[in-house]
Length: 156
Length: 366
Ligand SMILES: Cc1cc2nc3c(=O)[nH]c(=O)nc-3n(C[C@H](O)[C@H](O)[C@H](O)COP(=O)(O)OP(=O)(O)OC[C@H]3O[C@@H](n4cnc5c(N)ncnc54)[C@H](O)[C@@H]3O)c2cc1C
Ligand code: FES
Ligand SMILES: [Zn+2]
Image (cartoon, rainbow over all chains, first blue to last red; front, top):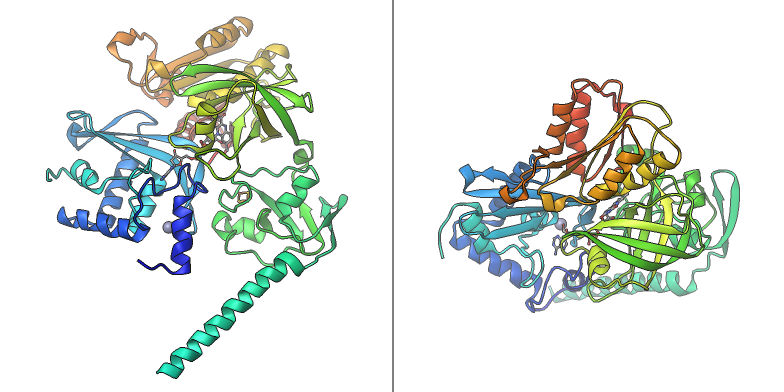
């Protein structure tokens, strides 16, 4: 895919360690737009889209806040959530105004032991850009895992 | 149609060439000569123009706190520029409140020195120095917290008020292509002037904490600058409630040393919260402070102790433990350090128990 100079700059920024350790693309060789497109397709199969996922993530982060760093049960104990605040803020690699606390939310399904982790910046990246990060990135949110864990959808 | 496209192409090309020329001119040709910076209406310094204010001040050994190495992504490097900075830039506005914009506050890394400037900075910043240190010890406190001991080599001693913080320069390494600064509260005994200890909690995929935990070794040279910050004990005699969690322990260690040395006998109860018993640390040191300071009590609080922890102390949220102990905090002072969420929750509890807002002290970390 041919990229405009702006897109190229964005791609370089996402692959560099300028904003977060190791960047946002992990070992993914695809362009950021290919990653976005393929994740959107995965979600569509589950009848979801990026805004729905981001909204649900925001809700769960809010629920976790009440625990002040301890587990909070959600969906009658089907999952539990915990958030950890670290001091400081991050900015969006697309250059948007605003900054996102270095807050991490962890969702765990006690029955399966499966976990899903995101930071506040992930919520923005998903909501505003449909970007779940590249394969191998420390904070990639796998769309199929998000669909299964966050929405009580059991599908393959 | 074709001639329209050709025109568009030519206009775009001319615009691109002009923009490039401007960048080149700015970089290689523009000579702003010597500029004068007036500091706090008192001191004047002559500097070479053309560079960002933050770096120009750093060259003059005036350290403005910054967390992103001057890339305009942390919003920490704020100074008041009364004159000479030109209009505020789009790269600055996201980090500014309306009041700050109206009050001429600017991001010093984004303001270029192109002429004479008049700026205002807090007087304490004139005491900030850069320290070359040697990492003299790394101690594991919990599974995700370590205490780092830095011996100062140049300059050899530091004066700070317990509660203040320093900035640690994290060099480039495999996980980070840029140097970054991160703030850490000083956790040492202020009488040991040749040493700075920091308690650092590992942050998942964090640039600086990954370096500290995986790359930094005893004997390595590390640059610190500081001290910064307003967090400190008041001079009153009021009884105090300290609340902290995680690495929020750091400034209280230094404050407790200060209380011990200066014979400060104020009542102080320190609630330290963790999710599990494995999050608690420095219990022995806190017991020693309890012995040395008869009016000091340490109250560890574990949110969800496991059965085999055999925990018989306080449980639940740290703020619940505060509520259980006190009915009225109107005559007290509150000191908080930890995550923004914990600070907000503790402020709510303190005020609901009658503690006046202006008696609640905390460092704004976010
Ligand atoms: C005044 C002050 C005092 C402080 N004192 C202390 C102290 O005493 N002890 C202490 O431990 N800390 C302290 N801090 C916090 C410290 O300055 C750092 O902010 C903290 O250590 C994290 O730095 P880092 O470089 O490791 O993390 P960073 O790299 O800045 O941030 C890591 C976070 O970014 C997010 N992130 C990373 N990668 C991604 C990705 N790919 N996608 C989405 N999100 C991602 C995650 O939330 C992750 O946790 C203090 C802060 C201030 C302002
Ligand atoms: S140094 Fe980070 S915004 Fe200026
Ligand atoms: Zn954005």
